[in-house]
Length: 418
Image (cartoon, rainbow, N blue to C red; front, side, top):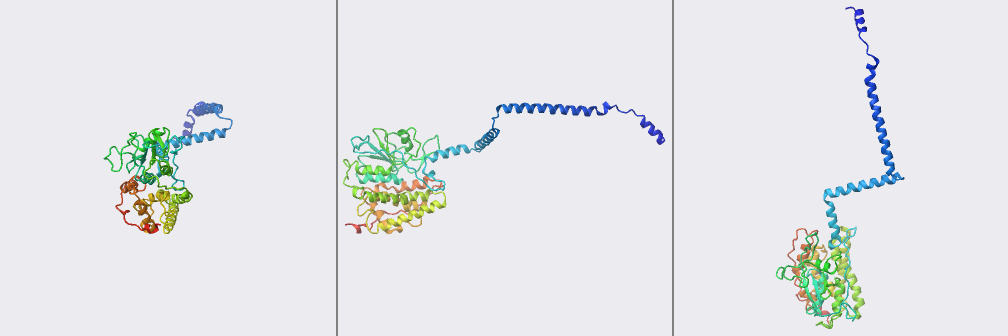
């Protein structure tokens, strides 16, 4: 077939009509435009709806929405990770455990006691000094409670005021939360040295606080001086309890003549108490409970400055305020008796041991041998409590074997006797 004939055949083919060539494309464009128009109408409707609810200040609205979504997803994350319960538990523990009384720098900050009533011989006092009316709850392990027990013994008041000791190691105080604290044994034979609550049948010191105040939210500490008649806590402040025991019960005390806070020494005793409490009594706790190096070193430095000061004073006189035993000596003793056995190891107070201070060491033996004092020291309870109740410090609860100091051994303090 010739080229001319071929071209003729091609030209003879039917040509598509314009409608057939562009119709499909036109239809697609039309559909797209319709959809865009519909979307535009929807956007317009949404904008109108949004404008109905959006405040005049759109920035505030958007900012509020941003914060809402941020906190919503934040709390979702807490719940999913199981952290919300842990945070709540920790917050509850903050108010009820000395281990959590911390500053932002990691330093230990002890909170004050709450019950501060006073037994008085005043005729108008709601708490008169009556024999058999009051009961003292203590722990042999606690130095603050032990000084109250010491007064009970050396003043001869243990017949007028009975006492009960709790178990040495903290346990759960309720099944409904994680609080660990002082508990009573279930029987007289369960824990030597401790006994059940004979008055209220309480299972823990916490229950006593809740009996005294239904909305109490502080720490559940010992000592507790309990009023049997009014069924409440008179005081849980050891510094004030020992003042009551020193003077207000003299009419029924067997050793009423002993005055550990005589008027002529009160200013001196107060001054000594202040720096001994800060540097030594509370100082060992500031060392042991510190959570950062700086506060620990600061507390340890202050501790040994105070101990050196005591050593110097006791090189010249038998007791802290002269040659007569006073309140200041009892307050210092309860820390010294625990020093080598507990604080040197558990609280990292190991720069120098008590036994390396010749005057302080002999002085501690001298106080220990005052009639009645030795019965207030239960070293088994002391060591079991500290090493067994602070898992953040001693997670496995291992109790060191030594040093087993004999505080009944002879001392040299008689050289200062008049």
